[in-house]
Image (cartoon, rainbow, N blue to C red; front, side, top):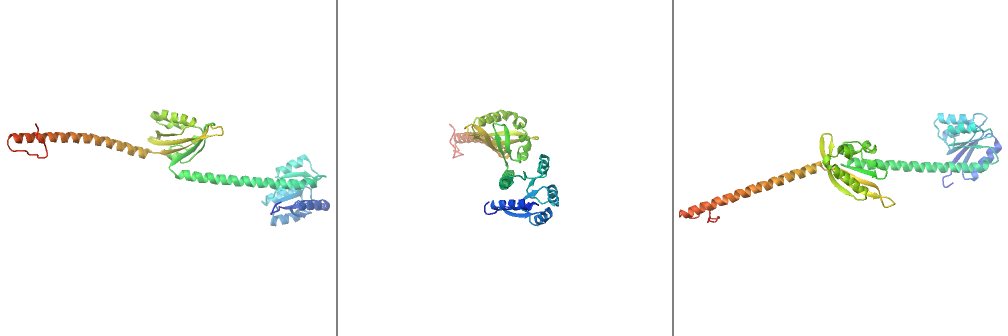
Length: 313
């Protein structure tokens, strides 16, 4: 039973049966308290609920069903096993509907079966608790991941290539892409509906690339309402046990500000080149004028006017 043995309460009105059951369960490593009436047992249960209850269906003061109703009405949760010499399939079904963990008849195998029943009961409880803890930790991890992804100005996603569905996409996609995560989970085709027509083929080719096991890094435009926004998407394939692409993970970032700055820089660069060409032409023209002035001045015998400029021949 380990370092923390489980505590059981037995309610059985037949002394000889109760004593045998109690001793058997004690020998099996359980802590046992036994009572011959439901009222006595309920007084103890209210003060200190046991880990489990072994309940005779037919008692001198209450039926097993009435005991269960009392516990339920008082919101005392105790797993219970029902036993009776007056059993029937209908009675078993009724007690199981009320929440009985198990049902056993008072026959020659009763003593052998009870330790096994309670060991199985507590083993199932341990498994259930482990599952509950694991699920809780998973939910907490998912919450932390979602909190992290939602505070970053990027959309993270995990797409199942084989099943053709999103397993995860950060909920901030509503702010970046203009649609909620349910849009993707419902299998809608974002590219066909929102990617700029001139960039659609680029996106389609990129998807085919990652499906074939190659990563991609592309810039493309999408419509977000009436506004055209620039996106950068990086996607990486995840191979399965057969060494074939099974999923792909990706990041989508709004790069509109960067693209706008790049376009402005390009325009400024082109304007600068034009201006330089204009200035170079102007300087050449000024040089020619200075040379002509020097030539005329020399002809007039007045010497060179612009000493930094050669005389035109």
